[in-house]
Image (cartoon, rainbow, N blue to C red; front, side, top):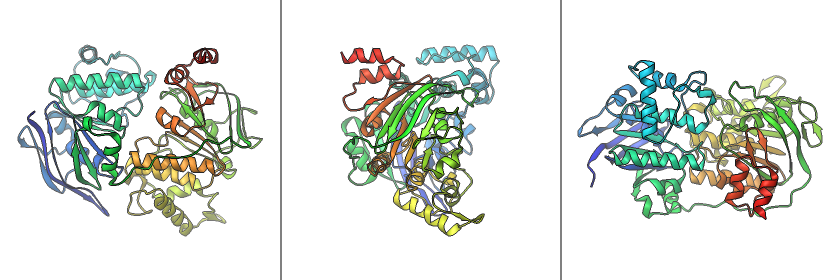
Length: 507
């Protein structure tokens, strides 16, 4: 039995209207890869923020290496050997790797010495990085390496990782797991948060499950199925999305020769994209992060205007129409970045409902907002999509990431779109909520809407898509029926293979 590194005893933290953590107690041992599981809103984020010094508990205590541990701020936690890799990267695109890492250090060494240390540590742990590359030119996986190396330079005794594989390719996940196993073998404890339960089973040796802020169980993931762990998290049976694939109705959206420069300095230009999607159909678009997903959604939402003839909706050229005009015509979208793009952080859920549903839900009249209708619509979204919040007056930033995701997707679906385009619909969402969102998308298509799902989760796309296409460096492969596609064929499509090469696989 490994000795205890960190002990949590009766940790409790309450906010107005909600108890985030209640009497949480468990131990993390040296060299252990320990999973922290729970539904969105179960209290995982509050707990790890407490360990990292971002939140002060109301009651309870922690002990690190047998001594009282009460970090008043993250720099105290880091000094005592606790490091954290957050789900959302905190990097500056215009700076290079070494400069970004230096910003996260209390007393960074000279640039030349730091660059040498970065090379040494990155090669030791199988995460090669050029310290002088500009971060804006890095892939999502390489950016995560920057965050990890920044932590490893602190020689942590406990490394907290929040949804670390959400933007990684399968190959990058394999490399990350090799690194984490090496750290574990050297005695570093890892507290690992993820909704990908098969990854938990492959990596972790202990799992603590939270539900509504309380510890409801522990297990050895290697001896439990993903379904068993999911049902421990939700306290009931896990529903599986169901829908028979349809033939599809009239063409709803036609895209032809879509080419456009990215509005972002380090974005990806769209290159001669063409496809169509029909009423009642789910078109899945896969790809590794940074291959033009954001730009494609912007071109379809109207945030990025296009030349005449490139985008036609219900037979009309909409290339020069903006987002509000497209929404009025029932073309709705939900972007990947929920906080700051899909939702305004400081605004209430009611106000965020007005931002996108004003026209379709008749939330204003003669220039005046109809707050009663807006609040009722927000309450409907909260109820239908099981958004865990005290009420619609709460700011968007007060919700957990998964609950805000449910609100954003629900807000668009309940506006009855003829075409819905979503990017990463279940990003950071627990298994139960992900199943509910996928079922809602399938139900929308079954009701006659066209649905485009852009996602990095291939299992998700294969589960709900009628046809599948891959985005690579701003180019889109020809859509193919999703049923029957092999892993090898999908891999070729994601890698930018031409149609001839994919056809060769069929032979």
